[in-house]
Amino acid sequence: MKHRTHTLHTARLNNNCPTCFGTDGLEITFTQEEKETPFFKKPATQIDEKLYCHTCKNNIYPVNWTEDIERVFDYNKKIAETNKQYLKVKPLFYILTVVAIVLFAAVVYILIPKI
Ligand SMILES: [Zn+2]
Image (cartoon, rainbow, N blue to C red; front, side):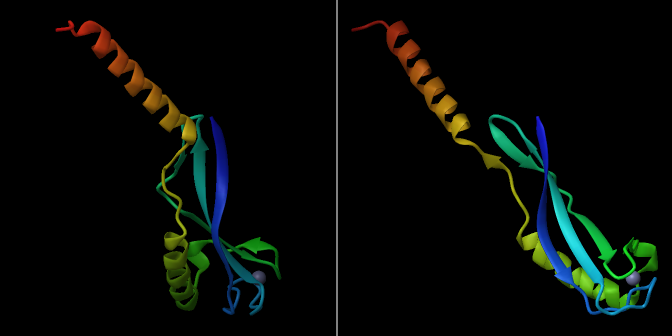
């Protein structure tokens, strides 16, 4: 099984960085993990978020967020939610389903006594 991480949404914030007080370094990233099998892609239900400051090269953890950052975070999280990935069934799944139905029909046809 393969694991992949999708970036759903990134945004540059104009807020002050709680660490270096710079106003142009903050970037928020929303990601979602995805498991891939031969039959389908199954994304995690949870979205992970990360706030990073390009000026001081630090991850800013929620404990250090200001009210303003939280407000912008909530706004961007809504955008990320709309980009969220859902369960995707691959063509192989459909092919196997069709093959299974055809086989079942054939078996039923053979087993049912002919009138
Ligand atoms: Zn900073």
